[in-house]
Length: 312
Image (cartoon, rainbow, N blue to C red):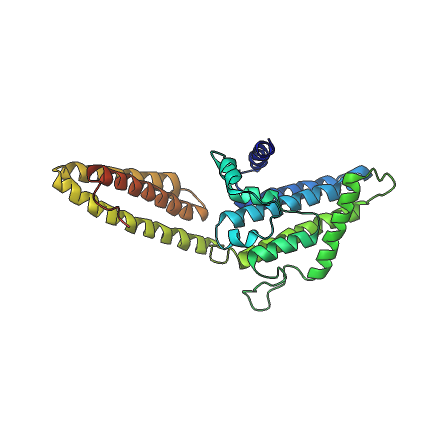
């Protein structure tokens, strides 16, 4: 019964994200902090200010857990590193039953067990997963301004937000008030903290991923080329089988028809759009179509001659 409730909760949590993807959780958090800042700035309600620490810690916890989900779902070495952090042990029999047929990931299960009651909780998880001290980050530009000027001060500010969250979330505390300036300072502290975490991720776990538009274009084009090379190898094998079986003309016509479809889909669906992002989107979509065609041909090859090994 406990596992059923947990599985339902995991699916529901993801369903409340903007794009249903933990990799984009930073946008959920940024949007909530932006809307909260607007509400605080336009309000004269003390009760509104008293709700601020509860709301900003909820946003921080969302980003913290989303980061764990993303890292653990990337596989090794993060899955191995996280094992010592999870206190609740699950036997193999229960794990198999738990994951069978469910629509959630291993990372989402792990993130559910992560404590987020203090700065030290966040520090411990990220230090273990990233295998670094979160204070350390490279700086790719000479004399570039620091994202966080005083990390220790920021830690103290965020810890104070945690303290107030506990008070207002668990006590009536009718005589304990927060003014507008303090409420905005708490929003700023959590915004800076999530920005700092985001920067550390891009300097460590995501350091090999594209960040700028130019890098994204290069990355997606390289992926397209790699998938295309795989397809060419499979086409060569499929062509030999088609020639052997006397259906060479059909196969050539079918392949040209597929290539024509891809060209039209990519050019009209992506490359004719305005904006720098569309080129990388076109490359990614083209790579996906090529991958699907490769898998299709591999299945066809196996059906014509099961003894032929699948192309590497």
